[in-house]
Length: 193
Image (cartoon, rainbow, N blue to C red; front, side):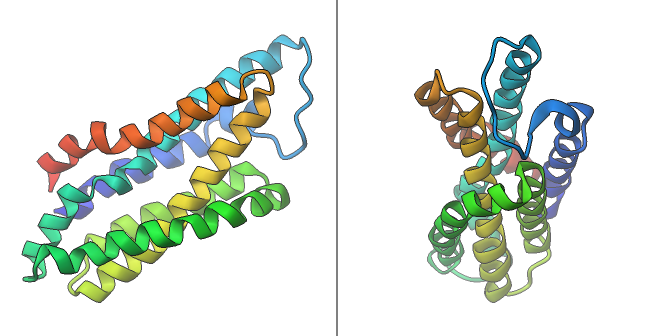
């Protein structure tokens, strides 16, 4: 039942990444130079909105209270054992948050979010079929955690580049959406699990 929430997450990520907005003027590999250009002004607000949606989706990784109990029941183990996957997820996420900036500069945000989305969505999807705690730890803890960190560093870093005049505001808004992911999507996931 857990994998039933993975399809919407993968679909939303794919839709955002390959939309005309995203592929056209949304994320650019080259550096951003602010001007009075109205297309750039419109594009930067689109970037903020889409980054917030992406962070909302990856924030589901923090809805552990929904997933942990279901996995403990499914794997016939105690919830404390399954919590190791969540601990590892949060432990490895900062690795790609730190390295994500360099990867973002080399490949551009579109590819970084695409690769991170595959890791996040794939990790969540395959975890839905896990039949042992070690698979939950590998796919949720490692793969999903690394993907979540990669996406997070890219959405925050790239959105802030578009708003040199409102860096704190934009960073706060996108981070807020990351946190809201578990608040908004956890009740939905609880009904699906």
